Length: 558
Image (cartoon, rainbow, N blue to C red; front, side, top):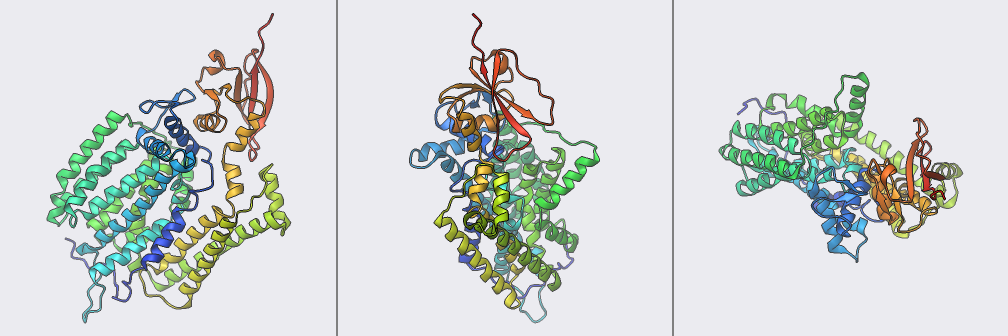
């Protein structure tokens, strides 16, 4: 074991817990908004939901689902979860909401797993704060609980999880699986049976949900960390990690989730984009994690630092290899939150004050902007924001919701109280520096999903686009859409209730009487053959440079 004393100096007064009701309120304000009252949003969200609802409605099989005659390219298991929820809750709950509920529970489970993983890592001997000559240092259990509260606040404050964590995509199942693996590695010396069950489930679940390579690498590194541990229980955990890794390899092979996505190019532009992605996606916890790496640099081989560093390094490497994938990077957020929490006992008062004041001004400005836009849409004062929205979202009509207004007002008042509580006097709690960043992110998300949800849903949903197409295409018609992509095809089948043929060769050999083609203004467009007659050009309400051309099959010549 490393005999160099650690940099954590924590008094008993600083190791106070965040009240349970406050922590649960933080989590609820983060998880619940965005679950209700909206359609599946464009791209991956509606694409995954399309397969789920097709399975649930019996339009395709469970083992080889298709949308628009296009087979599923990602893992089956996450789509089975959504489809099973739709079947179980139908017809009492809308299909989009039913599919979203289990994924909201997965996000809540991830937050809980991060808390318990941090709790066990902070209880290790190498992570304990320095003992004082005359006593008064933090007790191990109280210290671990305070650090765990800080880890959850750090995860909530991370910007990258905000949108991706509220989608119905396979990556959210992967996020929960990697959080479960982290908890198993952290709890191995303290919860032997539960840790073995968790590792036996976590790595195969990660492979079955679409990340078998990540499962293999994390399993191999986790086995090395356990083998080098000073805890005998952790060394006895190695065979379980190895067996679970082999099981993950087998599950990935049987489920067909191996997919090599090499997107790395030796280009300066790609490296610049990767740096920008990391900067905003990992903000602000990356700054605290870097501080942890510096202050705990002599303890990198101890398990409380080695476990989160190893998992985060795997996620960063996956993001680089895939050419800057934010969804691969998301798998490192639970470990990043743990590393950020270990910076809390070492922060100077000036750094903590800087974090507080930046959070107050930044998130208060966002809240004021959202309220101004809301008042402009509903009262017309000031007039400029409403006019800008009318230009950007053509055809949008503001909708008033009393529950949404009440929730937004309550969240704003809670933010004002939190700011007053934090700035009124110096707080001694370890987690004090992350209260305002986490509260600010939760407030911004709550206001966006209440005050701004109608216009955001209008802009991000495919429903307005499908309704424009429906003016020219009768219900139940067969539509060929060879180049629209899976998300758009899923929207056509769900919102329009049309039979869609999205095969690449559909334009030539389809039996459909209607053809949809995508045209980008910047690209050279090749029109279809003479058997297709142009009918209309359709744009999404918020799209300026992308349109959909609608054709109808010409009648046969006499």
